Image (cartoon, rainbow, N blue to C red; front, side, top):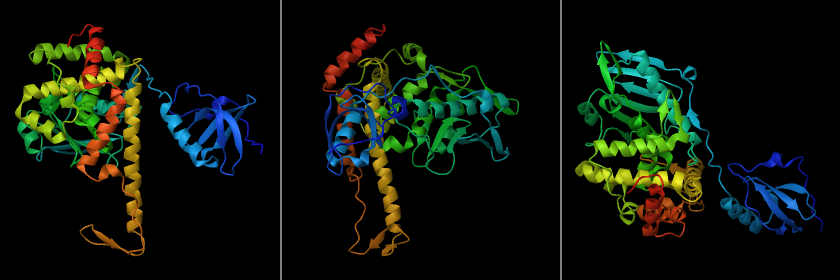
Length: 431
């Protein structure tokens, strides 16, 4: 039976989302859901429609749903093999004129000053002068744009309400009272879904009746914790070294007047190394990878609170890994890291789909939801299938171990560390 698909007016009409030039595949046999067979090569596939090069050299398009189940699965695997577009512009951020910082309320007696931008609402214990308010608002919004643009498949969105929330505290005691951890300069509280930071961690001082930037004003802590906040929905599926390493990576990218100079990541790396040499008693010895990879959030926080020197090694090694996977591994285009995050994103979306299905299930006739949130349902009803990663802490650990294999790419931890040392040596950095 002859197969006929509508020809494309041009190849550009069906580009592959998030892809560069696809890997060449030889022609293979295909079947439609009606049993029609044909020979063709895949040109592009965006998850919905596939574009073929037919045997006679013409191009044709078809919805993936019109193909056999076997061919649909082939396309899923084909798509995973394709290069991901990891090319970024030289700068990512916001223009000052586009950032509107609104004063929501000011209560000096209660030490509560609330400000709002497009994506954030932050509460301060002190009044900000206009320059400080502009810079904080601009840096918050620039970080939001950065996380959207990086090839980490992040879709920044608040867990609750329309905006992300932050609290800026006047001193360390206020910071600790609000839930800040000892030996930390800032933190993202995932339970309260709020970013906490004391003024001294970002370089703020009182000038007259308002707070202003001082000579130590810096953005690293701010960007680091905001990165955690932007990645909130993925945190449960990421090992702690990725959580902290990505935040260190974004925090070291040069940031000026609301623009991250992503093309100058190497400058940020060198400044980071220089900081360690002068402020933290030298560059730490990298933490053994076979011990770093399985560290949990609880173990990490325990080390942070009890052994600051060891925590420096953890943060440093996590940053080294992320920088290496983003800038030095393979062709230096971050392909493995992007594929890793794509896998995490797919898992995250499966969990979100499950949660939506459960919400719909509970609204059906025959389901009785109790005040404590538990529920009963008729024996003939079938619950939505629960993603394996939600079954237990061990299931999450197994998922993290499985996705780690994407980054190892057949290498042992020892082999990877040798390559990391070699990569940094080429930059003049000896580990």
